[in-house]
Image 1 (cartoon, rainbow, N blue to C red):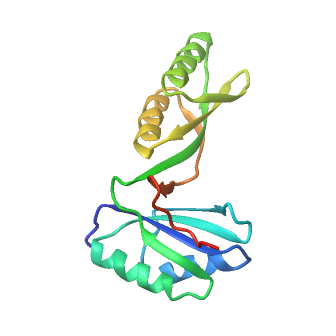
Image 2 (cartoon, one colour):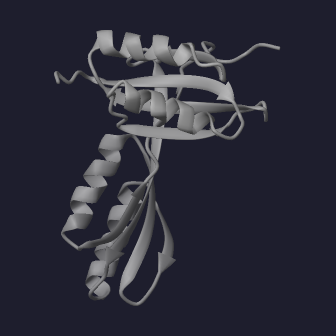
Length: 170
């Protein structure tokens, strides 16, 4: 399979049980790999926003969007224009700490990356980092030298910049 540039697809759906399964199953049936997926309620409690990233060519992404748009619980779907959206990802990283010098070094790195220490024990520190995926990757590369005990990443969530939006006007 010829991979393309990472594409971000925003989907507005009915906020009810089974919708996430239906969308992810559609991707599976079509043999499209989901790089990341985030889902959560919107400003309207009966709606949810899915942000899905795929690493596919333009033609494949167009096909995905057409297939998703046909689903009954999908209200709106669109690819976010490259460079015309804001995105963030959250990572929780538990890092091994051997001594006070390592603890100090890790704290300094956390401050440089504008992260937050959310848990401390005698032998580990848990850090929260929010930002673009490349920022998180850079932080993880630094933490590998200390030893990453556990890692959880949310995947990308994104919105179009400015007044442009993917929403249902009521």
